[in-house]
Amino acid sequence: MDFQARLEALTHQLRPWSALWSRSILQGWPESGAAYPEDWLDYARSLDETGERRLDQGELVGAAPPSLVALLGALEELTALPWHKGRHPMTVSETQGLSDKKAHELERVLALLGPRTRFIQQAVDIGGGMGHLARLCARTFGWTFHSIDRDAALQDKGRQWLKRTRAPVGGTLHFIQASVEDGPQPRIDPLFCGRDRASIGLHTCGPLALTQLRKSQGAGFVLNIGCCYDKLELPRDYPVSRIGREHPLPFTSHALALTTRGRPRKTEAEFARMKQVYAWRFAFHLLSKRQFPERDFVRAGDAPRALYDGPFALYALDRLERLGLSSSMTADELTAFEVSVRAETRDLLLCHLLRDRFARALEVVLLLDRAILLEELGFEVELLQLFGPDVSPRNLALVASQSV
Image (cartoon, rainbow, N blue to C red; front, side):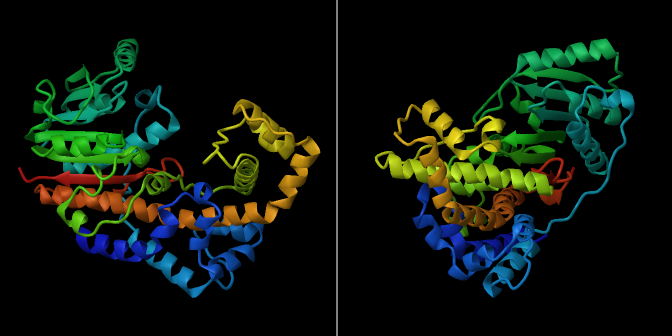
């Protein structure tokens, strides 16, 4: 893949719409809604429940505006990435103690590693936890494996698990209690250096992914799967490649949060549930803006599930009490207020459905920038879809190799 061409094309498509994806809809409302083309909103308002759900899945029904059709079509094409579909079957004993999600991921990681790491003798895993990946790689490939994690308790659980199950390891497995940080770390830095070394980071949180890439410049193989992009620090963590700095997008904290949105296909019940939660949150936001104009933004926070299932008045009264806010409105007045703003809260929902269409493209931009950085460091790089997105939404893997 020509990562530079793909990055330039994506930024060309995204930049004109930065007023939509770089801002929080709720915190900037109603001014934030003005950034949405009127024909987009008119189209979204015309949708029934099924149409809204289809839009949430990235599908357009009926006579959608040509500009929206063209944009979503271009973004879908530019975010289409090859799949690595291999799967390394694991035995019942190997999957013991693993969640279905973890087993799904490890089967696919092992299948990816096999044909690409024949020259590897040692490996290091960042955030290795109980050492499940380390154990399986040591057994499958015969590697000497160093599993690094800052949580000593998790590592102790991993050691006890190995003793209790008497699981054969194959290669040598070491647990190292440490935090992987930028800057020199004489104790662990040598583990990342050598053409016979593999550096692995699965779901490396925020800037930890970039720390791994920087420490792994001398490794023969690198596998990185990032997550929690909302924890990145701008402009330190984006852009990181020379090409990326030549074609930057105006990322904000709100845009980074957008990249973390999960994209599983919701059932009808799940979509209806999401709409109900949004309806109460949006109505409460409009209420707080009217009742407490001196406050910049009131975060309602997560409420117990039963409050979303009940009347708005109970939800609002609970939120007001928990936030230490006093309102003279009665339950009947709160109910009447919610009814009066339903058209506006629906517009807020529709703006969210439209804005979410940018999430995957923004995530891919971040990863293309990292892929180009690895190329600039001399690696041959792949950017692949590795996990089923319904199981693990952060399913994009950076795979990088250097010739022996």
